[in-house]
Length: 339
Image (cartoon, rainbow, N blue to C red):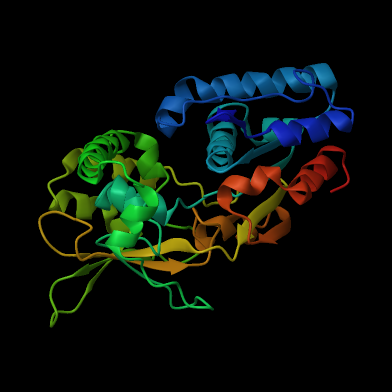
């Protein structure tokens, strides 16, 4: 998997090869279209995944270890759920899957993804400390978050002589287009927070109705209704479907859960109530996580009965997890039967 020229699993593959594993023999990739829905994957990706595992077990004579970072973790969870229910059954899974090693898995989505759907891409990717209409708060931060830099300082740093007005117009156009595109991807809703089977239904969005009115908490189960109130009916249906295919329940296979913590991460969104959710007057609460996924979602796998062990790495950003030697140690250990 290559992202912007970076081979995500390159370091892990090299480590596995140094331990005697071989590409396309007992190191096998599983590609899938991340934009699609679970229903789409059931038609092509999951059957292909099933055949890949079956063939590998037949050739190598031993069950496989399934691992993946970020969205690959809930994708694998959804596959295991499908295999248990619709293809092979529990006996196939027990025979063919030795262990599951998710790395930084957003098993209950990410508030950051939800922020892009309701507030737009510009809202979702404005980092704390940068100018913008959204206010950032972090009740648990120690030391406190840095003050936002001024618009003038920001323009001097980033634009550096480039036509600021032209750039702003271009970025607004691009981000609006990206927002529209993201709202058409079923996976954007699947990667937003849902109802976690292991904890009570909770709120990730607050609507402010005015300075004297009681704020309205929108629980995860109520997100489709929120979209309907905004006259976003297609988005409401996509969110409703995403909630029906969550990946928070125990997958039923030995699991080694790896994730990071102690990185400032979007954890709650507040918007002024109205016909359109906009970043003007909005605020983001920053909490614990890995910089992309909030801690409640990362730690879902910690609450499963089938989880053998949990490995928490402090301060590692989400995108850097597969470059960490300790992560490779765990995967290699499980693959060699040490864990």
